[in-house]
Length: 415
Image 1 (cartoon, helix red, strand yellow):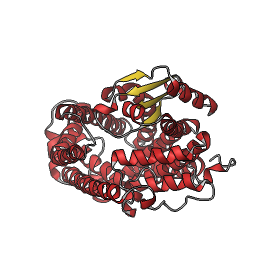
Image 2: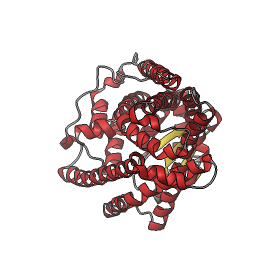
Image 3: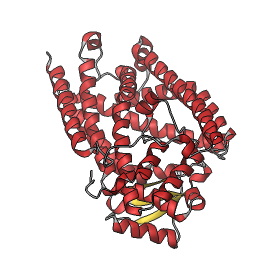
């Protein structure tokens, strides 16, 4: 066994072990006292017509999403696992870091081009069902900004891999794994102040009953909040949302403008209470730590793949290997989705329980969940495997069942 492969094995093994230990400690694996109840019956929440319309929209949107994912993976793997990507990278000019950036940009732009028809079809579907009123110009601008952010983010991460491999031929999995873990943490801190303003404008929520109630709730829950902001999300979507972003002096409650305008105060407060629960438990920090450790473990696994079998002929220090690395990252991300989303669903369920306990208003919670589902046309009964693989939140009917069951009343439930 080469020293490079030995290092990769240690990084992958240690990263995997630390991830499991941290997940066992930080993730609320029993988020609902007494266990998660069976989902509420669809007919007890929605009319038959509402269920039909949501299922009709969601089934079509899922098919488009799955097709887009399949095509994007096929194109990425076509570039990465054939000689075409390597030949393309070898022909590109400039120093190694420039070639890395160019390869990432070309591959991601190729993926965007071939999946653009699915994005357009999905947007037409959103327009047809009244889920967006954004102009096509605005849609294109958001798409371009998102693409630019994606290229810069991926190029930075892959650049760290290649740069470390060029500098530390044998120890690069350990060095790159550590650096990428740090970048994940820095990204979590920087996202609210760097990326969020690219897509939305923010203004402080004017003084009034809702702002006062939000700040009082935050104080009661022990969450320091610097401001309550309103995002101009209605220019892009009709769905309702709120979130808490940032850390310390950058922490703020952000509510969508259409949420402020559409929901009664009690229901809006229920949404905010859910987000404050995330802040109180440090879910963003915990998720960032798990993501950082997962990234380090992923680097170790990548090192093992690159030092085994036919892949030994590929050196990650060579920018020509970047298409191959991008294909492995794409496949690895898909395979990791069930783990990531299982963790997310547990965390979201705990936030629901805490929100119900904080507001003591299950009726407002149920009404809010119903409105959120209707405004987004969320499928009340998605396919089980789709929920397992892609569902980051419990289903609407499960969340309503938690509220109706009264199981959030257990004061000993802290995790």
